[in-house]
Image 1 (cartoon, rainbow, N blue to C red):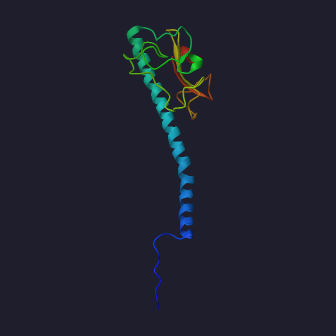
Image 2 (image 1 turned 90 degrees about the vertical axis):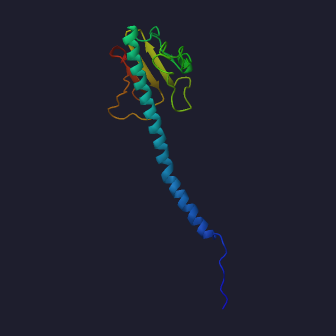
Image 3 (image 1 turned 180 degrees about the vertical axis):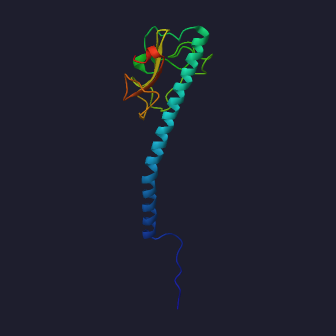
Length: 163
């Protein structure tokens, strides 16, 4: 009796099984990886706000006031001046003495015309906002913005909280 040798490679049915398994794994992994990316970007936004808050308080201890924008919003988005991230950026005079550079949103699609980072101060009070970029709004969010509750996060002095 002659034995048939199996040729190297996969049959069509085996290939379909492998493709089906890979598709199922992709269906499970892609949403998990997308959620992880969103969480990572929001963690970076939170860190940016905390770092800026610390720099602003240091600036005030040394200078006596917060960096002043004449009570106008300065931002990296075009609707608020398209300011940059250096010493002449959207928070005046904090780079390089208090921060190496002003933060930029971790999502490369920002800034846009109306979404990005912005800052306002009259010298006495301030508010910095991640406008339109956060991807989650958890209960008890320490960066809750009462003026933009569904779109933004903020840090502020008490007098700037409701700007």
